[in-house]
Image (cartoon, rainbow, N blue to C red; front, side):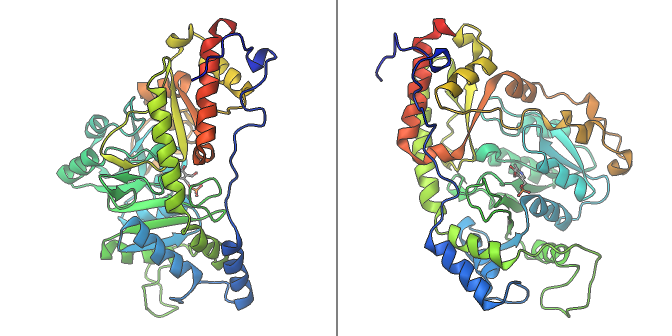
Length: 411
Ligand SMILES: Cc1ncc(COP(=O)(O)O)c(C=O)c1O
């Protein structure tokens, strides 16, 4: 790469590497989405109920085929998908679910919404994913499930997660809300546990604005999930016969139409991000003070929601991460800190109402996951997935980092 010695950092008045920021339009759509949306509008059938040829039903079949599961159900949000999955496995009030401390709030709040209790555990510092040893240490007689979150799209160690689940007879609910297209040993995230949960919210790699999906193979779980998602009805049963008091989680035909079209794009987009992510990781491997997450050959495809950079202040004259991010930002390369804090430090858990714990004695103010805290406080720099579609963006990221290195005395 060309050296930048002598060029002034943008934060000090120099010319930024990317004056207009990085290239990246999101969401990506064209006439395909427009056509299906108009078709839906003109059909007058705006609800998917009971129709195998609805947009939602078609999207469900296509998504199940893509993920490689027997069933898929579309729901209004990823949070709903998770809540329904926990309902479907029969969580009883106070049952525990083991959740990584490093994730988005919905991974844990969905457990609470399903009357369970999240038990937070630490993550692997090299992958940012749930740490198998921490799972084992957290198992109690009340544990019902493990929830690996493929955080940022990086697959959790599903060999170990499934091995532990099998040994202790626990369910595995994958939070794949950020991991569309990611693969572990050639199998897609969302097909690796008992149930997979996805978000199709606006920023996600497949989107219809707001939406969620649940994927699963087991027919009993399918029945249970359907009943919880469809006001207590049974598939093919009488319309006004309800077997449990339950919510209504149908997706409308409009997001269904957009989703159906978006599903044609995911393979190509995932491949572009995967290739560019591999290239970025290998180039970062040649640099000091900043690195990619560990590259694991069992990950056969990386889907991305975030690209995580591991910042090591020691490699940058002890310049704090915040300052480095400002300097990088001035060059036109935006990077944040993902979700900022381990989940247990959120008021949602620190101040949780006792009644929501259903007699479980857990005290979130006593939880400490040192790696999770270190990662969020000093290490992670998270870039949203969109830049990864284009190799030129990756080159600009590398150029900006190199420029900072060449001008380290200016920091
Ligand atoms: C890891 C994770 N889990 C769950 C969710 C919840 O999805 P939604 O926003 O569609 O409810 C998200 C999305 O933001 C997420 O990133």
